[in-house]
Length: 337
Image 1: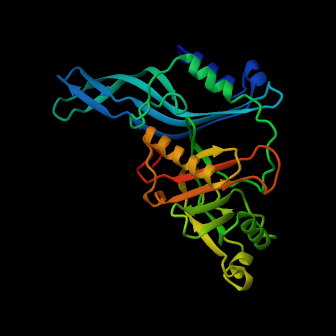
Image 2: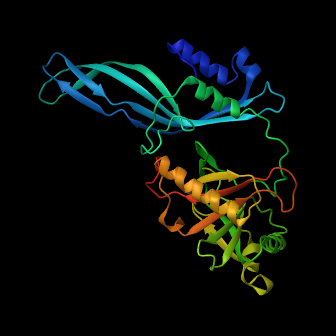
Image 3: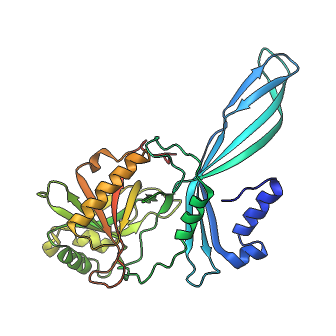
């Protein structure tokens, strides 16, 4: 949405987003940017003689997530953007010898920078390539994030944390840490909620409740509640509460088991209708079509599985928050590093 020229203009824009300028303090709070990866920048030397040499540098591409809270609006909405920045770079060198191409870089300059948003710039069915759009499309995308969300249903529990990797057109991609939870088969969701609620009464479970349903309509359905997760900077599965390990599989809890879930990248599509079977299966089909459109590949084991999440307390009032989840294959997305 903006065009910048020169280092000072770029710095002023960063300072505004970080609330370090008067306008920035008026408009924004809680701004942050997460850098997911830096790729490109490969150097190709072209040495013609001992005195002069030129090099070509491939475009440098960064992949990032930006978020900011718009403090000037009474309801203080948070806008989130994910995408890539493409930097065109040029350089000149001097070569001391022609035999070993011992080149010294005299100058490296960023010629220009172009930003692309995942929500508007991915070209459909291009394998995830980006293209330019009219500025009005970007303004509309930003404006839609500022609208009041209305009365929300009460959340059942604190949410399992995640890192937003992509805010796309009709979906998100998130990275979840490894976590442990309790899981049981169920026939009716209200009964599953009741059983896991009793089992975890003193354990402070997290949301969402995750349901696994096979597409054959014959196999058992399972519900899982996350309990604990691996904090940032730590490796391995988290420590499961001793009470959960002692109770699971015993007596009235014989169908409950403790499960460890490794860190993974998940594509998600939200829906606000009640989590009835036609609603969930439609959202799953739509998400799979979207992933094909944007060049993302589901994990093989998800082909016969529908997984959906419920965040709100059962029988709560207000706008509900439901989601379908599809795990992405290793190598089936650009966040493998």
